[in-house]
Length: 534
Image: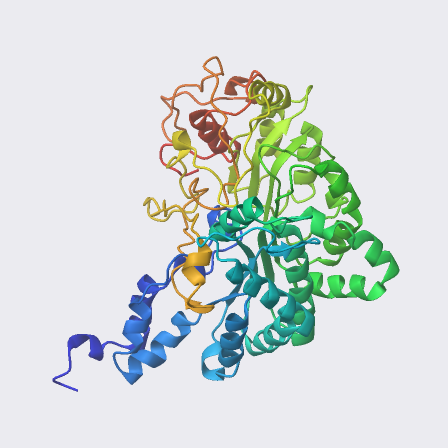
């Protein structure tokens, strides 16, 4: 051993610290009271796996044993026959799967097929019709034979350290193009479509059943593209089938963190659908009495207009540390009432894309938070505004408004402006600014089940390039109010707004400017925006 390289002489504890630098941010735990929580990390999509940990483990037996905990922290599986075969194999490797903490389930869009007549016109060479038929048959076979339920139940039973379940969409752009070409050359009475609603509905039902059957210890659930259409029958099902309600209650009891972002079709009445789902939320939120963090979001270009408590049902969680909502038109009293229920313990409040109705003012909300929410460490006010100005902006677009994509758009004016409220020793965090909006179909076509250490779910706050953005661009109006001059409450010679009336809120903007927003956030928590301390 005396002739061994110096690294082999290091203690295991030191080697473990080295591996922390190779390990993906996504496999590291972020405390729910941190600002980085409920932002990028919550909904980020994994990127291509890094070979570093695999290479480390191939060095020697000792390194392999130390590295296994890090390498197998995350497992990613796609809904496919090959994916489930590999998952079943992995479930049998107890020395590996005992280290799994996060399970990401990639769900492809489902084929929706009507009556059709194939081959009425010659199919051009470029259209691989056979590939589409093979994929359609595989989907149908997996569902009919419950291959997914079998594999998922066995795997979740084996993941004895599992903490986090995430369902992510997997959209095949090339298949979309192929189907469009087929429609031009084939005579369909009804066309074949790729639809997310039935795919999510199936995945949620199967995952839920597998979690119950496997007695999984999971505590956290995330989905960035929850479909209200796929859940619309649940209220009736709960009334007619008590076992469904019992299953939801059992799963909700285990939850400490719940992160949901809805992605509806444009042709549905979002308010109406969410009101239909109100009984579901009452069941879940009432049962989930151990929640420490909650996020519920809607598209920024289609904010919800129903009351906040129509979905939250005045439920209070005694241990709640972080609360976030996105894409909502609200009265100021609703925000203050919801915050007041958790004023003793709430440490983080995210109000992204929240618009105030006529008669309400943000300065009233901010003043209330500053004076009453003594435990708040951070508040996020990205793209808050007013309903009237927002609606006028939307009308000016003439209906040409794109869907919020799963990965969101980047806001170049606000790309690198946030800091982590929990920096240490005065150092700023290394926020990950990469775009996570990747084509997962290409990425996972050859490897259906992946052990990953490279999701790059950064610790940086509110990364606008991350998939949690779920936004579209609203330009800042040239006449919108500008912030007061930079102030610092560490220096008595600089100006500090004494009251909310001095914040510069005149109720006229559709989207608050970044520099003003940061000043407001700091003012609410009595934090210096210059030195990032209280």
